[in-house]
Length: 419
Image (tube, rainbow, N blue to C red):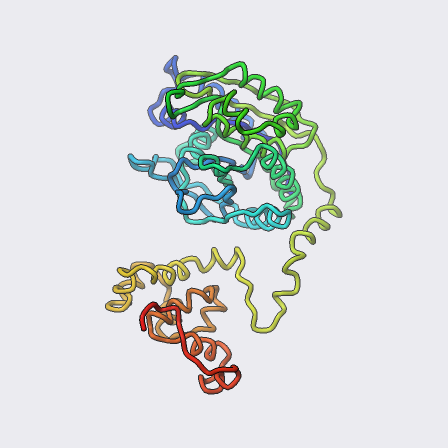
């Protein structure tokens, strides 16, 4: 089974990325930041970490208030740096561990954590500021990541106890993943004390920061019982993001060894790095198998239903390009291009010949089998003037009259807003 080697805590201030990108390692005012991260770099290399589970919050870059989730898990094969206003940082894309991501998603949802799932989203400094310091080489991080974005900026947000409990489930998820060679580090980012808005901006509390680190190591349950208002009072409103560190600590066992801790306050944020090694044994194979059965219990057997194609995370990733193309038919400009010059639009979206043929020839059931979700087929039908019942008939291999005779009322309709 996959092994959790330890946990890393690291601040994610944009100050960190700025320092790296502007070669500040030898500047006395910046050097302590590099010194702390150097220890983390060395530990990751020594422990031969394969995957870093990156816990961070986005700063209203890729996750806006039109859809703001408490917990959003990345399930993708690569992640790029986001443009936060001045162009993206020049740091290479990092690989995503697709199989582990899917396993964790299924595990946490089975444990009643209602996640959002994302792909094809760039990640901002919440993830890449610390990651670029943990692996500062020109070629970037050679391993892979699984990112978890925690929505801590628009209230209501998850409380500290919820984060701690998620960490407990995360441990079971990772340790039940069937790859005994996989070495995982849980990386919590954010903090320490700071506030960046309002008349209280510039607030810090070094005494609280040290107390937080002590409790995190020895008495994390006490931190889990604290209210968000207490975190805001003691560490600043934005500093309350340290509740994300409780996900990391929850994913570790009660038996940890602190091998590093450092913090430094140069300006607005007390920048910290910590490492805890996990000393407890992992799941045995029998326990891991029982947990895997729990993970898949809800949908077991559905895949055997004739003519039924559950739309899961593997399909969502594999057929993303075609689903994305069809989803954009809700945009008037995309519809117009599709109607006037479909071949040019196919090429713009880099659709394969197979994907183009399925659309042009209206191969409805083939698209379902390929991984297109039905609700995008009905959008395509609306654009083409094909009513829903005609799509249903085609999927069943019937003509429309035969299909309509199986209905109580023969009728035509679509999702088109036009009459």
